[in-house]
Length: 82
Image (cartoon, rainbow, N blue to C red; front, side, top):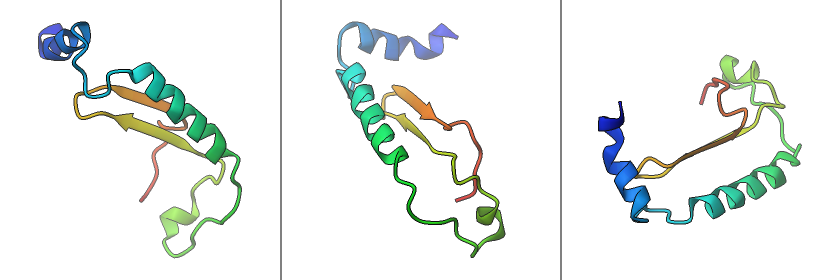
């Protein structure tokens, strides 16, 4: 419901968010993502069976600021074991 999010909407409209230029922030995150995505070094750990099943091509980033600004890129919706 919008009532649950009115505070974040109000802060957005008066430019009082923690990350004020979130568009620029997302651009920087995307650039870092694209750079890191090219790194194919390393290998999947076999120390834990669930980790061994991971797809080595899956790579995603999710960011949520303290005031609710969110950005996801890549395979951020893929579930994985940590």
